Length: 330
Ligand SMILES: [Zn+2]
Image (cartoon, rainbow, N blue to C red):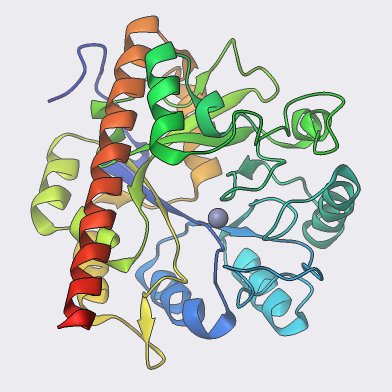
């Protein structure tokens, strides 16, 4: 059901809904994301791909297989995507924590390569330079407490927004970044949860605008989110969907896009949707007056819903891990 404050939006050219994707670059390589971008190009969808401008010479436990813009072949692929109309966004300097010096170098490299600043940004994993991350994503005291209990993360883990910290880069974010992703939900139509999109946040003032997204960690979650009945609802409600996903996580097998994903994307592309990158969509929403300060009731509802969805995801992950270990032990 829609929030009461949700007014109808008339999308450009008579389009009946908006759909885009923000692809976080975790574990992405030319081989495991190239085919999905070829498909999106052919379908006329233009989305947002995040990058890591510089390499990670100290190594990475979970992301060492990922490509960065230090890889010439991968860089050529990203530049080609940009020429084709995809938006290139920022996912931090690289796959592990970066002190300020590396962040400065990464942003300078981004500016040189793309001739414009990284306007759209999403925090990455446990990187200490993340902006307002962890429990700093929210304001409700009890939820902050429960979040710490659920994740076990130290309270001072994320410091990108704290002046004086070795990981501070808030001034650089203010200078270059316009939109930052915060809360994600298990819901295809963001207008059901966050109709004031994008929104300004008077607690998190380092950047002008924040936005929400639909969570799809990997290809399985993406296919569930894009189920035909959800697509029907998105179109029927004139909704807005920004999917936060990782194309490196299972979207391509043996050099081809997974058939179920291709089928769902083709079905979506046949609908009268507006398929533009995240920054283009958010700029347009700002121009339409849909964006603005976040009403307190909407923000409160968003935080509770986010925590509920996060907890449900964690429980599902733990059950799956348990089932896998039991299968191995049989
Ligand atoms: Zn990431």
